[in-house]
Image 1: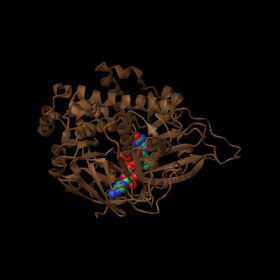
Image 2: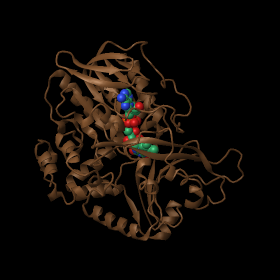
Image 3: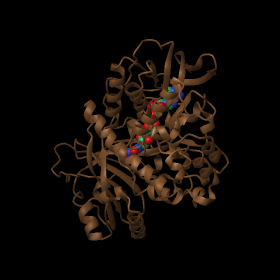
Image 4: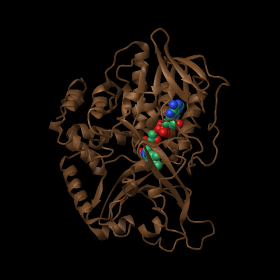
Length: 487
Ligand SMILES: Cc1cc2nc3c(=O)[nH]c(=O)nc-3n(C[C@H](O)[C@H](O)[C@H](O)COP(=O)(O)OP(=O)(O)OC[C@H]3O[C@@H](n4cnc5c(N)ncnc54)[C@H](O)[C@@H]3O)c2cc1C
């Protein structure tokens, strides 16, 4: 087995430090002998795919979810809880790369995810602290604020309807007064959410288990997949073999262990996050925060932040602090140790960042790390694994899975179900943005270029300008979906 198996003795995050009922769940004492679909990974992608298969695909009646460690012990159980369509970070870059139409489709997909998640949580009554707020972007660096202002004007000029929800100010007084962030030079805001991700995942899986169609097996690492034309797939685990007609890889940063063709496409990269709280009984309570944040400080170090309903703050990021120390985060799956170069960055963060927090006794109550699946072109790979009929991938969500995975998994369930019935449907019919399709061209692009040319280590230069990227253009033209007509 390759080096990317999840490690033991991990640092617990604030979301998973208290035990939940499905942590070590095994629906049956032994593994089922065979099933229609095996899903590998019980994080957000695995649980959401299982949920959509159960709800939307009655032709699939036996699903096994195999998880190497505890339920939701990967990135999903360690993230920032920020359900935030990214209208300012990525989308303007995608406009430059792919044109307005394709980039807008990604933005609208992210926004649609947020509303669809809210609907499901309400309908299913999942108790996971979902709150919708304004997410405030703050720029404290003068040049970065100017750039943000240019971006805002550019995005406004496209007349995109979702931009109506975006408020932007380049006036430092308004920016600081509105955001509460000291030294803010510009600020923007739009609708976003926050939630307790592990409770959401456990809630989804509970619904799946109640259907009687799903068998969840935790502490069951998958070690190998054997393709067998007669029987489908033999899934080798540390606890025995399961035969499955279809296999879904929802292993995110670890995906290349079982699919080595993704070695240069989806790379395990660590991030850091913490919980900050005012100790009980403190005589210096901190002001209440009602918004989520992305803060780019004077040094351009980016942090994301959400207030929790229990009054604490979840904050993480700091990548610029540890980026030069590549061995500490890049191709690294050890979530049992913190990233040394950033572990002290969030001490005193609230006091130095927010107005009126200076005298608060807020301090870090939990700090942890987690493994993301960073992809070469920043997009997840969703769909049939090229050249491996019956195997599907739903992975590579970078630090941004929350507003992508829900509807991505719904679309994938549709593709799997059609495949199971022997029906042909195009990727476009899945409702997933075409750019996210798992294609051989995307695998080849990462294999044929230097790692430094991709989005993880470089600045995405490989894709700019669009006309120098014939592989992508060919890719898009292959499709019969409306995306193909985009300029
Ligand atoms: C510190 C941090 C902060 C983040 N903050 C945010 C945020 O605020 N907002 C946001 O949108 N995104 C955020 N992200 C990213 C987000 O968490 C991920 O994109 C998302 O959780 C990915 O979900 P997943 O199910 O694909 O992966 P995971 O949750 O990692 O699930 C994959 C699962 O597969 C299991 N597995 C791996 N290999 C095997 C095997 N061989 N056999 C069986 N099981 C296996 C793993 O144990 C794991 O449980 C953050 C990530 C981190 C690490």
